[in-house]
Amino acid sequence: MRIVDVKVEPVELPARPSFRRGGRLPSPSRVGAVLRIVTDDGFEGVVHSRRGQVLMDVVEQLLADELVGEDPLARERLWERMWEIDRVEKFPVHVLGLVDVALWDLAGKAAGMPVHRLLGGYRERIPAYASLATFHSVEEHLDVIDQCLELGFPAVKLRGWGDPRRDAELCLAARAHVDGRAVLMYDGSGAFDLPDAVYVGQALTEARYLWYAEPMREFSVTSYRWLADRIGVPLLVAESAEGRNLNVADFISSGCAEYVHTGELSRVGSLTGWSQRSVVIPASVRRERIVDTQASRVNSVPPRRSRTRS
Image 1 (cartoon, helix red, strand yellow):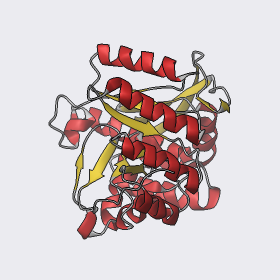
Image 2: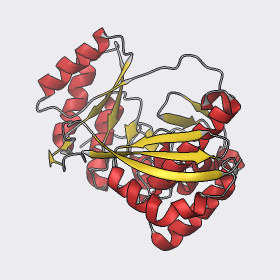
Image 3: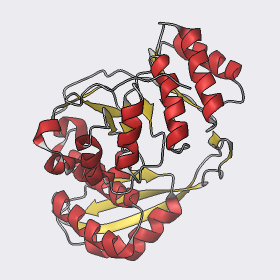
């Protein structure tokens, strides 16, 4: 079986609200794309992307010729070749991940089973949580939380405004509102520097949040280690760091990661790129369990000290 065609088809996307944090961020692109990898046996791997223009440019200019004629089941070799091209051309790693998703889709079709079964999956049900957008007021957040609980969600993840005082107040108000009716998590979306991340983290510790996701941009593992030493709430890391399929090992071995992101696989180079983490994570911290579709927890990380906010 060989790849005979690689094509990217643009599609128009429906309008959707912009994500808000502080001020409004740029509106989402209305140009999506569908990547199709076709073999001489008639199998077709398909993946959809909301970042259509970037996908079209990189695949057509850099990757299509590298894939045509290759064995689509040799995913590790194809991934390594694309990773090598990325070293020189510096294209977004999610494009590499999208190609890999299409190759896995093709492999599942060739094997006659969904990819999760191809990987050995056995679960038919997994826990889910409601992930909220950012609303204008605390009261709006509390109203939406109630709606989520009425729909049967056992857990809710909040996003604030990127203002440490307001976000801390929101998180404390949400805990007081739901009391013990729901598990709560908070996503900082990389909004804070270290002092502000500590301030919000201490509020989350006080309010018994399950995790604290991406409080700072993920360029410095040392900053995350310092943050971990100053708060008690578990950190969820390695969401947006470039090359996180490899540097997640540094977060874990430093002791600052109790949870690591495994969701949105295209951003880590997909299944093939993510599987490389097992090569670089030290054996002493490799034990982990999947707790939901977005994060996995490292059980061997020691508990943290909890400090009072000031």
